[in-house]
Length: 245
Image (cartoon, rainbow, N blue to C red):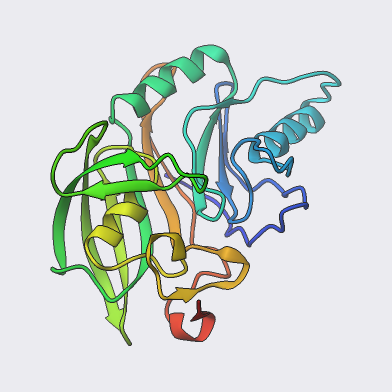
């Protein structure tokens, strides 16, 4: 198992220091801080891919382009472990693992209220809303264009109207945890897009990708990577870090 140092929030225009968890000839595994884009968008802000490429160029004294393959994503304001490919072959094989839902992912979330049971699973149907905010619509019954989503959860702690929940998505859908927890009546702290009552500083959403288990793209050895929660993580005192919308 491989761990990284916690990564703090990165302001939008600041190039991130790369927190490397694991590196070999095929993989670069890092702890993404909240506030950093995984890949470029219209904002033109620095990205994790930019930071990884800069790291590899400097470490290996490569003046030109270096290959960095993005095989999965975390939302900008989500922190945690991400795996990047260093070769196109590794990218293809890793992408297939994520596409086939064979990667095991473990998240921590702080939610307002709490799920209906201390341990359970949730199934829903999800589809992009098609709005300018890029949100996902979630329903308990199928609808046009929707795909099935499935996750399991365990409440680790609960206090003061909040809960710390371990979430293990079985499927990999866009905004799946955010949309499904909101559908359960317990939106993520800070996730005002999905109905949260309270905001966190810097538009932070209380979601952290704690662990990732993959098969190595060359040889297939099982690997587990972890990223400890960052310094700005709102548990165990979420009320002191949040404010009304």
